[in-house]
Image (cartoon, rainbow, N blue to C red; front, side):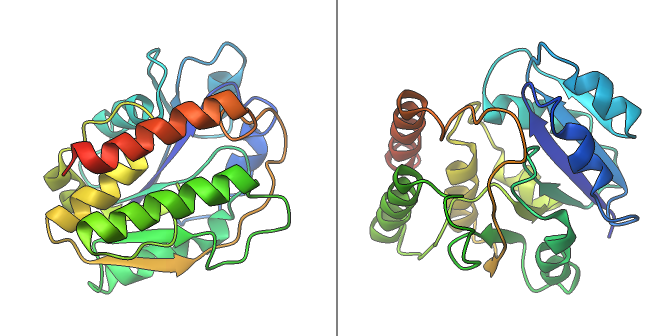
Length: 225
């Protein structure tokens, strides 16, 4: 099953080349850097390092992921999402891909809490927000998640079934809730997580942005109900 990697990015010229160069050879048939309106050399460097580039000027994690999916080649059967900042280890992608290839799961989530992240990589408000969102999902949807981590893999046919709509920070939790609603086989596996290699964290590094993202995520729990 051919795998495609989508890397959402916004002004990541300081680390995108290193992230792309660090991808294990032959693991992904396609690599798409989903440029969310960068004003630096992110797109230029991504192309220079062998990636396809989608472009979505509307700011929002979901919006840029949807733009990348729209240009996905027809023979890509599994879609993997990875952050651009080097905080996740692409060499661990087989942990996500193999259960799908063995037909044991449709959606595999990389769990940072299960993988014991490096000290300081997950800030206190990130840990609390994750716990709160996962607790609400458990109470409302009767399923236990440990994380809303962005490092994940999903069968393409399953992703199309979910008909994702969120264009902002609710993208990850929408995928996880819709997966339960549609009866997908969901699996969590431990993944490592460290501090970003370079550049500025657009969300968790700023309290106001984190609060805005948290509100969107929590509202999504109930709106999908």
